[in-house]
Image (tube, rainbow over all chains, first blue to last red; front, side, top):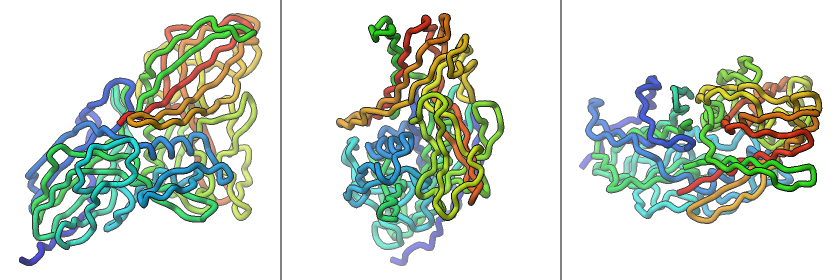
Length: 222
Length: 227
C-alpha cells in the first residue's frame, strides 16, 4: 500500500480569550491540552478537550529554579536531559526555548505511544513516535505560538504543533510531552529537557491521511 | 500543576514569633505567563513582546538565546540583593558588554518579594502592586532584605522550592501590609545596548498584617508542582 502524501502545515489562528475554557482552580498555574484530528479536507474527525494537563515534571522546576535564581556557569545545577544524562545547566536565554522546527523531535511538543502513568521523575517520552512516513511514524510540523492574553480570571498563551500521518496505517497517540532547552556554558552546548508529560486515557487514534493538532495552553488563574 | 503557599510571619526585634498567617497564593498574573512565553517562543529582539513594567511604562521584552544571552539573560529572575544593591540584567561578554549600565540595572529591592498597602482585588492583568511600600527608613517605608531562594526538593509526586524575604520596620511608626507580590526581571537584548526592567508576576492580598516599629516581617512563597 502506497503511503499517503501529507504535509504538516504550521497552522495558527486567533482565539478570543473568552472562548478559551478555564479548567484550573484559582491559584493554579498549569496547562490545558486540546487534541484535534482533521482529515485531508480539514474536516474535524475527533476533538478532545480542552482538558487539564496534569503533569509538570521535575525538569520544569529545576529549570525554573536555575532561571529565577540566576545560577551562572560557576554555580550551574544538575538537570537530567532526554537522553538520561545529567547536565550542568546555567541561566540564560536558552532556558524553556521550545521552538522546534519541522521534523525536529527533540524540541517542542512530542508524541508517543507509551501509556505508563507519569511520575515527577520522568525525563523522556516513554515510547517516542519518530518523524517520518514509515510505519508507526508521524510527520512533525513546526511549533507555533499564540500570544499571551488574559480575561477576568485567567492568563494564558498557546503552544501548537501538527502531526500528520502519512505512514499508511493508523497510529494511536497515548502520551504527549513538552521538550525545552537548557544551556551548559562550560561545555558550550544546549541540551533538551522534558518539562511536561501527559498520558491520554485510551489514546487518540490518528488515521492514515489525517493530521493531529495539539494545543498546550499554559494558564494561570486568580 | 504548579501552586504556591504564602506564609507571613511577624517577629519581634529579638526574633520571637508574634504572628503567623499561611494561605494558598491565588494570584500568578499575566506577567508570569508573558515571561514564560518569551522564553518558550524564543521571542526575538527584532519582534519583541510588549509588556508593562511595575512603573506602568510600556516595555519591549525578548527571550532570545543568541550571543551573550546564551550565558546570562535575567528574564524571570527573582533572587535579589537587599535594598539598593543593584542587579545587572544582561552582563554580556567581553565582546559585546553593554555600555548603558544604568539602563541595564534594577535595584534589588524592586526584584523578588514585594509588599504594599493596596487592598484592591487582584486581577490577572495587574502589572503592579496597588501601593508598593518603598525600601527605606522614612515614614511608611520598610527595609527590604535580600530575596533568597532555598530548599529545592523533589519527592514524587511533589517538588518545591521556597522564595522568602525579610522586611524590617525602622520607620518610626506602624505599617499595615495589605498586599504581597513578586517582581521578576525582563530584559531586552541589543549588542552593546541592553535594557532591564521589573515586572509583576504574582500578587496576593493579606487581609492586613500590622507591623509595628522595630518588628520584622518574613514573607515566604513556597512554589510547588504536583504530578
